[in-house]
Amino acid sequence: MINKKIKIAHIHVWDQTNKGDLAIVLAVQELLRLAFPKAVIIDYPVEVLKKKDSAALKKLNSADLIVMGGGGLFYRYFLPFSQEMISGLKKPFIIFGVGYIREVGAPALKKAERDSIIALARKATLLGVRENYTKRFLVKYGLAVDKVKVIGDPALLLSELPPRLNLHPGFKLGLNLNYSGWLGFGKWREDILSSYRETAEYFQKNFQASVYYLKHHPGEEAIYPELKIKNLIILDEAPSRQKGAYGQLDLVIGMMLHSCVLAAGALTPEINVAYDLRNRNFARFLGCPELVVELPDLKKGALLKRARAVVKAGKRYRHHLDIFHKRVSRRTHDFLSEIENLV
Image 1 (cartoon, helix red, strand yellow):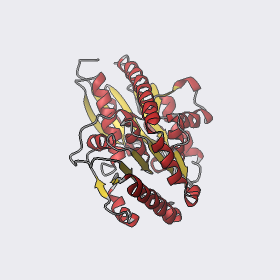
Image 2 (image 1 turned 90 degrees about the vertical axis):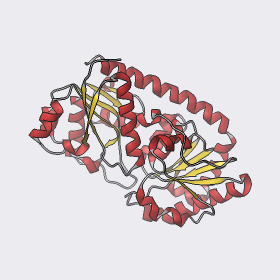
Image 3 (image 1 turned 30 degrees about the vertical axis):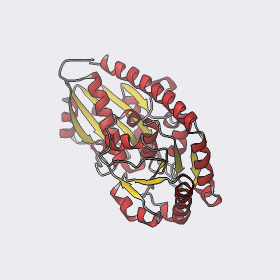
């Protein structure tokens, strides 16, 4: 713990309407304050790295540390990063729990985009990524294997508060859809909706389940009514309270990656409906590759089948998640110790 007052420039996704993005930012800043209780943290949008801006560069370099992350910042939407901005960073530069994103059906990154990621990664004094998928991507395009530390997603360690909404007793199922801009949703729309509906109705009939929609983005207001699930309850809390609610659920079925990350962080079994390679790779990093259902398999009833199997083995999954959570916590705190040594 560093008790002197320092300034940290924190570069991250700026979208405060996306609960997952906000959870990541809050988690990173909570962790940084564990190491630096007196730190003053100044927020910068990731777009600050897209073009040369001398004034912004001067402000970044006025900090004692520059921290980027977490979240899916290696994403075509933010690329390419400016090589001039990267070369102009003079203070210790930390990449903290960042991931690479490639959606199903999306084209591969262009060379200039890949090169800018690698340049940024090489600039980093310390580099921690959220799963092995991102490490493989960086190593494939030229980064040294031993430079990349796989620490996990910081949102797994976000603090938990009790939700304001009192959840019902008995079996509780949580659902989440990705309707926040993923262009592929239309292709799979009916398969997704019908498989979610089938699964929810099964648990309502056989477990007298309460079914909660886990809202992560305002765009979802246009789609969750289409589930047509009887007595669906909307759960829309601040990130720490949302995570506290996740801990009271028996099963989460999610598409937005951080619906599954928050569930796993709260030790609740979760199933990823994989619209993105990162969904699959989170399950692999978790050590449970079976906790994914691929979009083409929805027609075959795979979601209900997997949900029934996971609920049956619920105690085993909770035990596994507890071990996984402790491992991520150790890796992250070791990473924080390395950051402390830079100041």
